[in-house]
Length: 134
Image 1 (cartoon, rainbow, N blue to C red):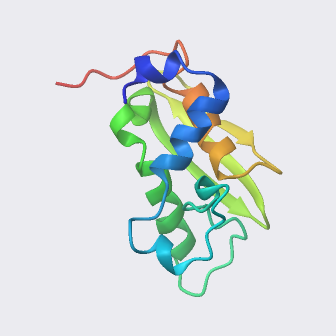
Image 2: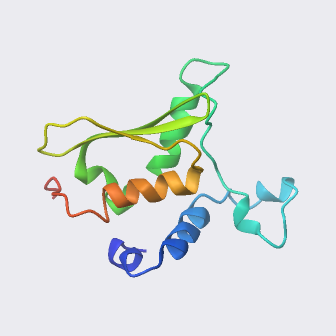
């Protein structure tokens, strides 16, 4: 799947792609009680509480979810990009490459798929410049 392919899709098709990309590996999902009518509903999700039993646990997990989409070039648009959660409220933090503003996008009430889709809108679906990669 390429950015050009995704750009031609409807928002719902892109969100289905996100869900498919975040599906648990074969074998793991067999241990879940999977809704056979909606298997895409069982995918990796952000830990949104912000609470953790070990320092850094939420950050590492949530970053790993965003990193699932690094192959699309989402980080090429930014100097930094991360998602943080506090008491269920997600915030996307980013600074575009070669720009000065530190931006925050409140994602209150949004789920994992919608947050990733918003990251796509802010990066690969935007008209922002990218860093040069060889």
